[in-house]
Amino acid sequence: MPSLLALVCAAILPLQPADLHAHDGAQQMVDTANALLATLPAESKAKAVFPFDHDERQNWHFIPKERLGLPIKEMTQEQRLLAHALLNSGLSTTGYMKAVSIMSLEEVLYTIEGADPAKREATREKRNPERYFVSIFGEPSMKGTWGWRFEGHHLSLNFTVKDGALLRVTPAFFGTNPGEVREGPRTGLRVLGQEEDLGRDLVKSLDDAQFKKALVSAEAYKDVLTEAKREVTPLTPDGLSETELNDAQKAKLEKLIKAHLFRSRPEVAEEAWKEIKTSGPVFFAWAGGKEKGQPHYYRVQGKTFVVEYDNTQNDANHIHVVWRDFDSDFGRDLLGEHLKAAHQAQGK
Image (cartoon, rainbow, N blue to C red; front, side):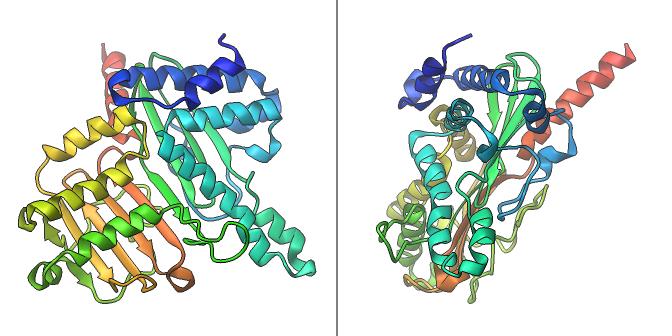
């Protein structure tokens, strides 16, 4: 088995798309997941591992609550390093940075909310940077189908691997509260600032006729419309088609999509981008105000996917972002193929 140092370094060193293939990510995940499992006593392993088809695999959320799975706070230092190596194996360098920064914001929230001594203990439990859970579904292997999840407040990342290829990375949820840290030593931090700024840059580049088509509600929605649903369908109205954008605006839209997409591993994001480019027009929709500090919402939707961004809570300083695939969230399409193959084998 590879050493702990080798596993952590392989997962954390920066990666370039040209150097990678889908099976490289899968191999890292298999090695790191198995290394983590090998360190767990029976009680901890029972919390961490589920059958691949267990109902828990699609029971996801992004609120601060207890989950099934093994929490970071119950891990040894060695296990925590491996859990982070596993998390990083599914993300780009930027994506991993955003994920751990989101986890660190729990400490900021504790500082803001834990001033009352009578509530400090309960607040500490609710706002805990180690209250994130690792769940593994099936047996990590380069053969067959398995998956894993890393989840806690404002973070839900779901991965599905089949026959040694990392194929599905949704639902993928990132959120920040505060969206911008406005007090204390981290003042000015905006973990999802790029996602906010690029969306605003695109909407403010639209002329009146374009904006009229893009605007789906004068008031921003209170949250992402897909919520934490297990399955989602295309949202309506569509908004403004990319076919109605000029070249400069198309470049802004592409940059916006890639800001969301390339939080995933580079080679996985590249394949998804190729699919998006060949699947028909993409639509951009906006709700709420266009100026910074005003509640606002946008979505980018294509034939196979939707990205939702919402910033309305806490005086428009609380961001939710989610990427959903209509047919392949949780590797649902892979699971269908898996079950079909099993049924055919039984029929022989």
